[in-house]
Length: 260
Image 1 (cartoon, rainbow, N blue to C red):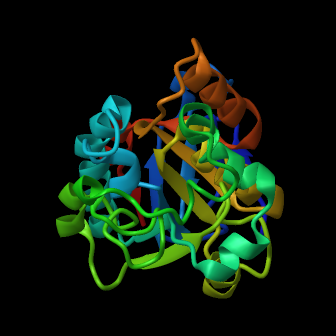
Image 2 (image 1 turned 30 degrees about the vertical axis):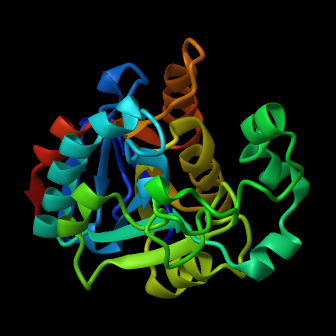
């Protein structure tokens, strides 16, 4: 039963696994020799990655691309609520144990600027004490303001949403992770991705989801990155659209009709 079907007439992939109610989503602008997908809303999950104060709030950085995703993301969240698609918030949220077992390659990603400017060694970035103007708490520690969902998005959360912490770029790197276990137990099949950064934590989680067998759909304008290298987002979109899944946009997704 866990199969995709391609309809040569509509040029769409059917990912619904035989569900009676289906959401019909255009994708990839028809340039990949197909016109999109049909999904089962009850088996879909909107995965919002790292939309946290630490990554988006102006007191930490100027993440203009992340800020640009907020309005379309809110519309997508509201569409998901109407269609019965559950919402998931996947965020960095570490503790002391995570710091002890974290690979040095992971900590380096948060330490490069500090090492260059101040000479600090490993483990200074993640878990470090932040200055008062940034909340005065430990960096990306679970329960802190800096690790909380970005303030303007909080009104769009509900108790029915699921939240998962991660201590790696990917939230699905191990089958022992709570998110991995929950996805298997819940029977979710199709993951819709949004958040930051497109080429880092979002792509890392999406890549693992693809490798473990979940359907992956990127909502392109609901994802942003600070990587200042020409073509970064375009390469991510291309690889997802041609290999790991599908790419659509918020306007198309919000206009998607249902059948059944």
